[in-house]
Image (cartoon, rainbow, N blue to C red; front, side, top):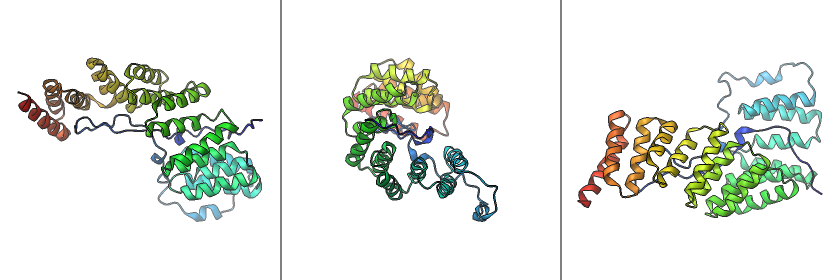
Length: 316
C-alpha cells in the first residue's frame, strides 16, 4: 500500500536542475547555455547583519507547535534557513513526534550541510521506514555530493512509496542527463509533468534533454511551453535560441537570445554558433555587431572576433 507522505508546502527554491555550459568550438561566451537553477542559489545571507541571538531568548507570547511550524515555513520560503531551523526546533519541543517538521528541519540543512541533513533524514526513517519524503531528502543530499548512484536508489525508493513526488522524478532526470542517458531523462521529466503539468521548469529541463539528444525540434516545443507557462527566465530564452540555431532558424534564435540577455549578448551568442558551424563570415558579422552595440562590455566578443578572423584567413 502506498502511504501518503506530503509536506503540505511547496518549497520553490529547492528545485535542483541539470546544467551544461555553452562551449562552442572554444568560443568565449558570456551566457551559459543549458543553465538551470541550483539549490545553492539560496544562502543564509539574507539574515540581518545586526541579528542578535538574544532575540530568541526574549520572552515571546505563547505559540503552538503548528504556529512555530508555520513561522518556520515562511522563513524557509525566504531562504532564511538558520531562522527556519530554530522555529522547527521550537515546534518539535512542543510536539516531538511530528515527522513532517523533522523533514522540514532536514531541508534547512541541505545547503552546505549535507552530512547533517543525511543524519536528520535517517533519524526520520528510524521512526518510520516508509516515510517517502525522507528518502527524497536523502536523494537530494547525495545528489549534491555528486553521489549519483546512491541518490538514484533513494529517489527510486521515494517514488515507490509515493509516486506523486514529482521532484524525485525531476532529480532522476538530472542524474540521467549527467550520465548522458537522455531517453531515460526524458521519461523522468514526463513522469514529473504527469504529476505537475503546470511546472514550467520541468518543460525547460525536458527541452534540455531533447537538445542534448540532438532532437532540437522537440526541444523548441518544450522551451516554448515553459515560456507559455510564464517560466520566462533568461536561461529558457537562451536554451530556445540554441535549439533554434541548431535548426538554422537564425533570425528566431537571435530574437530569443535578445530576450535572454540583451542585443549585444545575443549577437555574441549567435556568432559563437555560426563559428561552431563553420559559418565564419556570419560569425565575424555577429561579433562586430556585438562590439558596436556595447564596446566596453564586449571585450570577450573581441576575442571571439579575433578567433573568427583567423579562421577566415586560414579558410581563404
